[in-house]
Length: 446
Image (cartoon, rainbow, N blue to C red; front, side, top):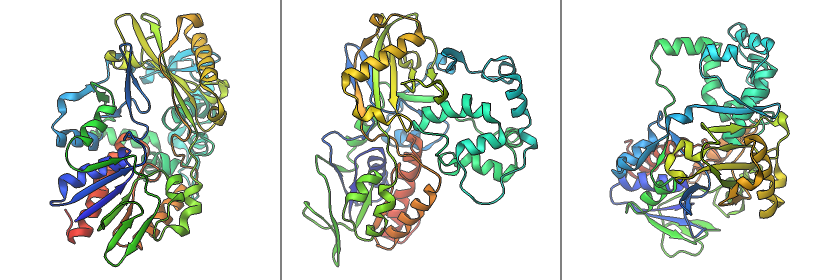
């Protein structure tokens, strides 16, 4: 049995790794167009600093990423976040404000006005949504929690997770569990009370690896579960009587798993997918720039801060990377990582390095109340197309792509354009995809 995986990001590598461990005798080749695998996940060192180009970690409350680590037998590489990471902030009226982490602190905080807090207290009495129209996150928030909650709570949260726009993103596609809770319980507060009584598991602790998230990529590549072919772009796939043929590769494959961004998939010649090229190309991927700065110790404290779009800042926020994971900084300096771009800031795509550093350092200095000369830029990572955005109606795109792929036996589609953008979402999809492929090849469910 020969399997080709197109795409060497976390989705493709995770799927290849799980298949390699779960499907006896399978020969698995992973084709990645870039010379370095991992997609937006990579870790670099510079003058003692450990810097991430993309995600900084994953939550340990969901099992699939930890399951891959267990399969690798590399549990000793895991690094949980420091307790300092519990302190999180947003910017309001140009100032850093600590987010409340208990009901008492919420009612005494300045995040919302008294009226805004009162509106949230009315949530249990708000009727559940009627009809099946896909609702934006902002629409959901205003309906159940009020305008202020959207502006000062949901907006920065969505910015931090998706670098997205609450007025465009679909609640059901981006946060399906929240949508399900309202449909099942009629209220988020009622759902929380009910689930607490059932001892529902917490979301978990932010976790990474001793050598950064890039270590997960490296461990899977070195596992021997598959063969990686870097610098190998696949542009065309043909389905012939003897199996699948790739445009520049010798040999025939029984299965092809497509794990590339939606825009790349729209540009490939793939049997059965011509009819969904328009839908694939319509998935937005805004730009992102990640700029780490060295800051003298004693200035920052906690996880970092996010900036609501109402503040009209040029940056999305900043992570206090070495406060979250102490080995990211040095003895004298903390590492603070600034993010720019996202769905409200497409101009980042055309900004040069000097402009990005200038914008990031000016904003960061203002929020930290330091002189710009006290900030030293130690890296710059720019993604012209970063995180896929799940606008309202996204589920229709997923449905059409799944239907088109299902019409071609042996062809499968996965990736963060369809099944969630987080590390845990991608590893969960990897296990599900491995099971589908195994069932297809053997005719038996695991």
